[in-house]
Length: 116
Image (tube, rainbow, N blue to C red; front, top):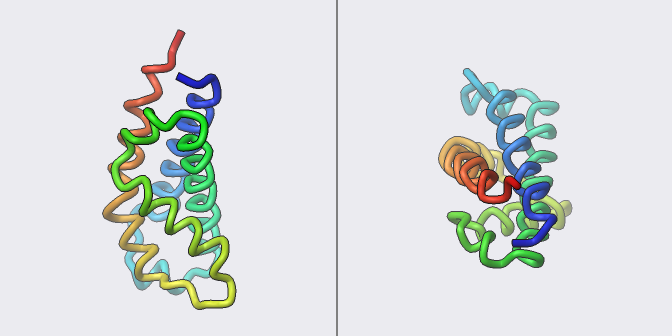
């Protein structure tokens, strides 16, 4: 296990929690109508994706335990590098609702593996 893994997993877990808190009791229509909320969610998705890229680089065994690792990183890449294309907010919302709870639970579950 790499010494950076706990920090990276914590970054993933915290950003998942921030997104969950920011989107609690929200509908897709609420999300689409709130530019600042969308930007906050996208920023946290960027953090999640970057943390997972780094985790994959330094600790591939732990990264391999993350469901949909490549899709999460791919979403990060689309958000970070697709600035000249319109972001599909519906796709982002679906990821928030369908994929992030699993990702959050997995990151939280992996953290105790690194406790001294």
